[in-house]
Image (cartoon, rainbow, N blue to C red; front, side, top):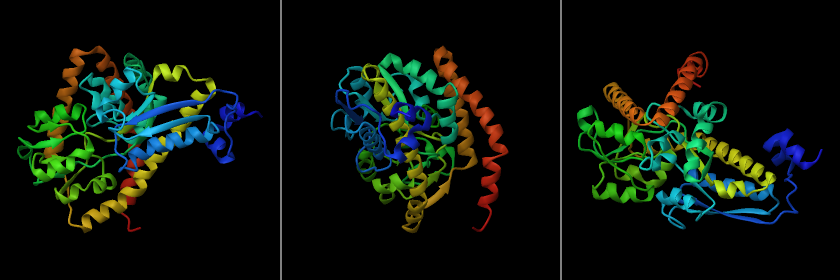
Length: 360
């Protein structure tokens, strides 16, 4: 069996375990630049970009290399889509909902309020209509998308004061990651602020922010939020399974050979799986450390969850009324979600509920 057939039939796991790379030695060397929206201090998210580059180099025998640049090194963290449109870089690693100012549809590539979990997102993207519909949309921006990994269900953020009722949210200055969540929270009285992760600590310390959400225990601990805001709430109902994405210049991707396209796809799969597994492995210990250090871990009240759901549905309805494309993607996602909820009632949720009640 030749190497190309091996990749097709054995898959990336078999190729990596065998230590083999595609037969690309006769091809010209390829050099890409990847601009991330994240800092190097986050080995989970930024590590996904590094894993991608490492895998591309290994599979190509060093003929295809991707240099990885943290947010701000080549372009601003929130400037990666503009850079791709202008062919300034070949690819980016980001959270698509950072760009809902361009179009609300960008949110569906990452997370929407009361949306899909990590496994559900993966299923919708790869075996539902998610990736198909989003790549049709992204084509307007010279982008081809691939998953860069999923954080899983996120935490509800850090607050300088306790949030017991919806009234406590009124006037709250909160850093939000982006997307439709900011619109929903605005309906609840929150003053949304969108800023890169690296700027949040200082804003909380100075009091120019009252609260922030980012990801979960491992990342949040590294960013030091527990030092300036003691109240840690859950769950992040706006990010049931936040997907990070590799945005690739369509022009650059189309110029690749068939072998190199296969390498890019395989490397994205490796990086995505690694990032999600890393979060699941590292969050539990980080949460224990945070609580031991004095963090007040609290659940959002049902009142707040219900108010968030109502506000979110109003936001979705408003965008559906303006955009047939938004409506098509949102309705497709919800139909897929309904089937997933039905199945999970008899599988994951029932099993997890029982296990959670045991003394392991």
